[in-house]
Length: 140
Image (cartoon, rainbow, N blue to C red; front, top):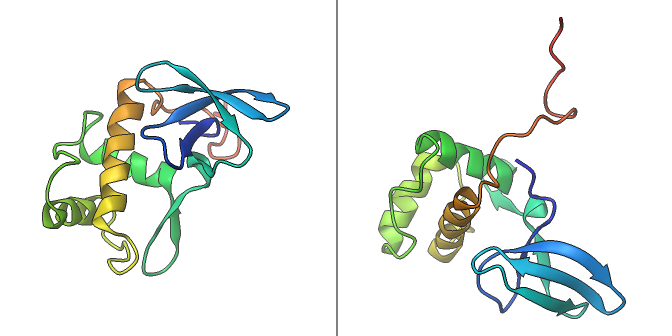
């Protein structure tokens, strides 16, 4: 699961994949409709690999949250809608990440996480990838 080139752009719905850098910013492709857009350096852009969810003890990377959802849902779409009411979203997220900080993680944040999870899953971007820093090589 490699989210290093997946972007959330403030003011624009959905997620984008970084394509190339330009003099004035960069080009990105929407994961929802495959449209390419030019993003200026003044836009507020977040890499999904850098986003974390607050818990009562630490911050958990979004990748770990996605893995928890994928395990809970057995690799399928989230069983609740991102349009569910706040109490339903919070109850679901408590299953996904029991120690999440209920004072700093809002229903709107949970809604985004579920929407992003479903979008990334549908695009096949949540598949496990072998990485040298997280997995030890198999001994032969």
